[in-house]
Image: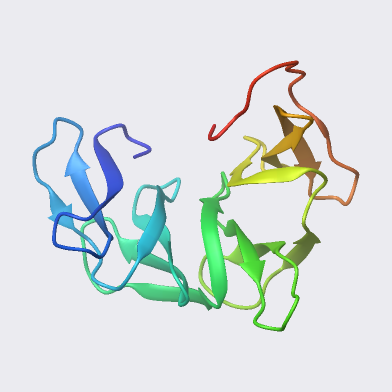
Length: 175
């Protein structure tokens, strides 16, 4: 959490379906926050009041960090959300239901509504993880070429992506 006092995580502890849980940093006060089906990729909003997550086949949701009723942000085939540093947008992978549709990165208002921007899948994309640059003006993603992963910066102003790292060996699975 932004205040460093709690953690959100995915657990199968109630059976075969993953749900989002919150607990204090010392492991106490564990609380199940969600009860839908196949929830994943939880992340706090910068103010610590909400947890944003994806539900397989359903869309992008948020739930109060103290528990309560989840709110749909956007419906569709959406996964791997990342909340912007100012808490107003969520970057996520989005694929419409049309045959042969390509995956795009959508920037969605955190309070719901149509995407404010859709970005074609960036150059060399190899991991579903996306993150915001701290200034909120670009996204970061993993690209793998010839068996070597690097993190690339994708500016939101439409400029081409560029390397953020220059590794010469190994793979990046998460960052």
